[in-house]
Length: 326
Image (cartoon, rainbow, N blue to C red):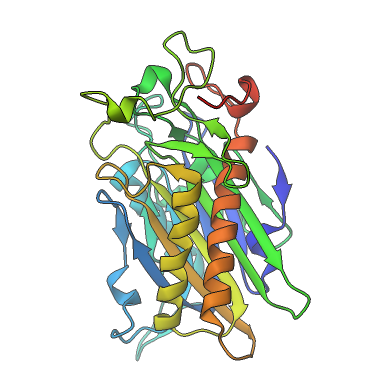
């Protein structure tokens, strides 16, 4: 595993992981304790999410205080309860007449096939991840929401590889920052968009080399388990944007997902990207530029996530196999 600034380079954002010991799973929390404008774009047909309706620009809530990414399938949405408790203890949340209510959207990925499926992230996982959050850097690889992530599952679990969580940042001389944090658990393969090289995906029948999904997609029946995948993440910028503008950024960020993951946005993935703005940089919103950079950092974070991952029995990581293009 590696550590890098990534998303935490943006002032006002902190990231924390908690990984369970009983099996490879966990959760990752993106804290915006001072509040951040937020939007979401869901492109996969098998999503698991919480509190996404309030991010619609027509709805009243304008800021969130955290975003949770979790393993454990829909059970893992419970991690957001722990983050709410953490924020509530600190008096952080949307002010109502009688209390402050933390606004904590969440998305999950399916990793129940790795180890004992009865072991899932709970509210305690979310609380611990929030308590561990900081702004000094993000651990990448097989940690937090990426602990049980796998990729390249069109050939079945026996030919899949280890996924993970990664982050990336673009900083420009004029002060603009755009960053991403992605947990990669795709049914598809992961390619390096810069070279087209296949990095992680379906392995050969003997498990010793990469072959990818290309041929399988042209065969009669690829082995794609229903809804047992998903790439989820957060993109963020320091430029002041509103919810509608962030919706454009989130939508464009999915272009980066599709560059790195092939196929993407499938019926058995729940691909979901949140977009945040801390608003620390007041300037005219250049959505074309910010959205294009969001796509770039999304793709880079996905690549970094699989490259930093550590293998599990039956699920080798990129470092365990030679890169190979079919």
